[in-house]
Amino acid sequence: MTAITDIPGILVGHAHDEEALTGCTVVLYPEGAVAGVDQRGGAPGTRETDLLRPMHLVEKVHAVLLAGGSAFGLEAAGGVMRYLEERGVGFDARVARVPIVPAAILFDLAIGKADVRPDAEMGYQACLNASSDPPAEGNAGAGMGATVGKILGMAGAMKAGIGTASRDLGGGAVVGAIVAVNALGDVIDPESGKILAGTRPAKLGPIRVGRDPSPTRWPSCWGWQANRRCVLPAGETRSLAWWPRMPAWTSRGPTRWRRWRRPGWLA
Figure (tube, rainbow, N blue to C red):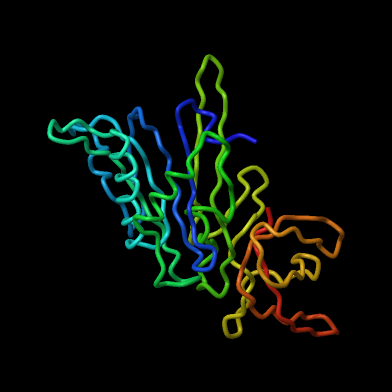
C-alpha cells in the first residue's frame, strides 16, 4: 500500500463521528513545508489559503486540514493550531509562534446529523492520532460523510470517502496525494472509462436515467458496519461502505420485484 506518508516528515491523522457521518483529516509537517493553492469550483470553503499565493509573507505551512461539516467544519483548524502551539510550532511573529494551518471543507450535512460538525476538539484529536503509518481510507476522517453522484439529488447518490497514494520517482523524489472525494458527478476509471461510483439509475417522469440495476450488482447487506465485508450473489467478495436504506428500482423483467436494498461504494 502506498500513501502520502511515504514522504519523510509527513504525518496524517483522522478523527470522525460514525453516527453523525462527518470527520476531519490533518496532514502535519511540523518542520514547515512550502505550499500552494489552486481553488476551483463556485462554492469554496477554505481558511488561510490566500497566504499560499506568491508575494505573501508566510513561506511555509505546518499543517493542512480537510474536514466535513461545510463552513462549520473550518472550526476544526483551531484545534490543530492549539496542538501545534503547545509544541512550539509556528511562524515566529516575535511575540508568539503562530501555526499556519490552511484548511478546506466539503459539504456532508445532507447525510448523518447536520447539527454535528467537526470542531476544535475533533481537529485536536486528529492531531493526536497522526502518525507516519499509512492512514485509513474510505469511511475515515474527512471522507466519513463524502458522497458522489449527486447530480439527481441525494436520493440517487452513492457513498465515497478518502484515499491516498504515492509514487517513488527515483533519486529521492516521492510524490504523494490524499483526497476526500465529494463530487457532484461520477468517479470514472481514466483507463477503461468505466464508472466506478456515481449516480444510481432513476426514473424522472417518463424519462429513465441510467441502466436497470443488475440483480448481481449490489450485495444484500443489512445494518451498518464500517468496511463490512459482503459476498455478492456471484460469489465475489468486496468491501462495502455504508449507505442509508433506500428502495431499489423495480425491474422490467417478467417477475417484477421491489425490496429494500442498500447500495454502497464497492472498493
